[in-house]
Image (cartoon, rainbow, N blue to C red):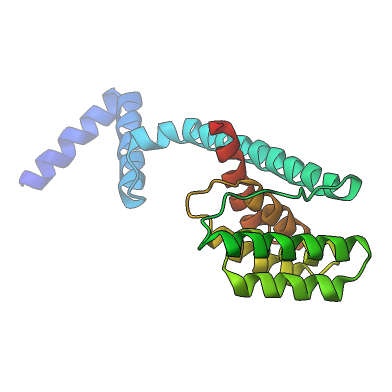
Length: 205
């Protein structure tokens, strides 16, 4: 009896106000869909705006990536147009005056041998200098020689050795050269890391 009364009540409302009933049904269906999909009506309405914001972020990231790639390309191009690897001078902590003079003399001998294209003797002088005392100078110049000869693997090894001996990051050029090397060998993530470190150090100067 009670069910019949309720049914009759809604039937009268539907017959008198069909548009109101239709609206209620639509709202009910929409609410069920939102509940099932676990998305509130507010989230659904916000979605288009969030998608637009996400697209803008993606475009910004893409622009930054293109700028970084252009910077890397420019730096790599410069290495083939000029004498890119400078003869850097390092402030070393010497064991004694004799070690300083001996290493300095051997590095000069190596550079002279390089000027005569005698790379074998140059490497011997560097090796002997490194045996006198570990320095920043020798692995840098060994890497420089390897790079100019096209031995990028050895250049990487030697420059990483030099960087380990520069914990205070006093010589950003070491990271610049290694970043360019990584770019030339297609290791873009490592290239960006070292070139970013170089750019940060230059900005503080």
